[in-house]
Length: 266
Image 1 (cartoon, rainbow, N blue to C red):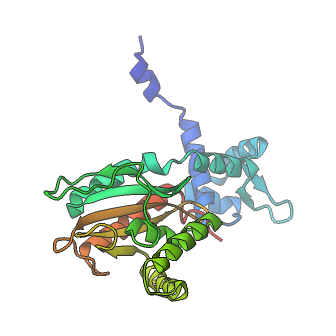
Image 2 (image 1 turned 60 degrees about the vertical axis):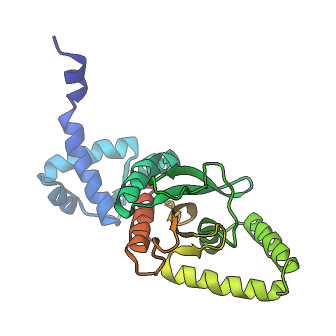
């Protein structure tokens, strides 16, 4: 009697073989002749042709009548978009945040754009002597916090601009600096962040705490989240070329790739 586990491990070899041809098409990112698809899939052209006929019938590939070249079809696009729609940055960020925390030995977190602005949704505490008071559900300043600055620099939303204007207006009212000057200073800072691909804050929101925040993108190239690291001033290196900054950018890029960023080519 075949056990359930053994049964689950059994598959249909012809399906696995056939999907090698689809991987060849997907990697090429262009219509291909049958002989080239077969060569890439490691099988004779006659065998590959039988698979392509079946794929044509279900719409996962299509064939140009004039050239005879094959390409991915409408059903392949439908499957791809459906898969991308199921990707959850909060769920997928878990292992990446854990690894990042172990690598840089600092508290790290994930933020998304919520109803009230840049909102922390996940925290991995490094257990440092100084407690970081940011917790899930915390909405952060767009102009002062590293996380908020990341959204200000890389996220696009009319609502974000409204909140940011309100912050700058309040800052201008409580200081001798005009709102025009504050806007000019902030835009210069945000341009610097865009050039480096990461935002930072040096004790401006919470005294004694520095932070980096790197944008996370989805398959459309839109920012959907930010990975943030926080540490105490004197221990947390905020230089652009610091190991922490490099690790942050790599972690954000890893999560972006899991969300399909860079997988759709022009």
